[in-house]
Length: 215
Length: 215
Image (cartoon, rainbow over all chains, first blue to last red):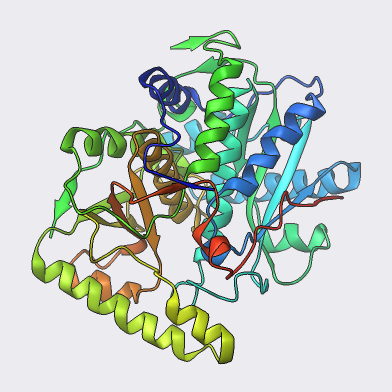
């Protein structure tokens, strides 16, 4: 369907709510353990397919970790990577880092590993010749849509990147051409805030709107 | 501010509109040439700073191309990369590819090169030890927020990736540690649709919601 510009339009009230959604979306690390409504999860996941993708390649691939074995591998992976990361900090930084809760992997009822299929032929390579990383970026766009829609349903998402991605891919026995983009913890959050947790605990502050350079 | 879960909540009407927004967001290549309202552009850009970023590193850096020299470099870059890409297709694929309009660079009133500062110390490296590419993904999350908010204001965005990224970075004289993530054309779109242009012209179709593997 192609329509003249402005169809559909969006109201000021909607835009205000969209801004509120973005302000209250959080990287959640503290989850309630009660199960997620399966229909809500399906609705949130389905919006990934509305994301932009380079050449319409839709390279996102989703693995849901349900077995104790798969979750155990992922948790061990995180713990080892987190210990290595801690070893890289010293003094007050190390003390603060060790106090941070950096994943909700022991509580989150839903845990997803999101991969990019670097070997997909869908889209016939359009837009990826000079920037093959565009496929990864397409997957990130889909994740960001999932994140926002989830928050609109009262569902929290936490993106864990303190992992050995190649090791997780092997443990989950996915095809060799699948690259891990994100490990997502999903569930109802224990609390809600408009301030990032890393700011609340004093690790880092937001620096405000970016300066725009002119050329 | 930290509040109990559910504060703020979002209505079903808002969620329906959010889904409509995602369905009608497009990668726009055909723009009107009239200028963008500067306040609207500022509002849309300001939502980038609400995006998630690894370790709260906020590594997004934005260059606005306003001079004829900068725009000329970018357009030459695109044309060369696009000619090289066309040479990689044969037969019907080549014929169809050559008919595609793949950028709005000759019309879009606002053009932005969005970079990631790989050398930023903000966030003290948290979350990037095993996955340094997380900084790039943070920039993509910010771009996706900008894209959605822009559409909610009736503004179109087109992401051009048919470019030599290192060459563009040199031409724009940005610091060596800045990696190009996206070249964005921004302006009022000539038309509006809920179907991707690549699908409308027969290059590729959407495959629908992703299959979810269990492990």
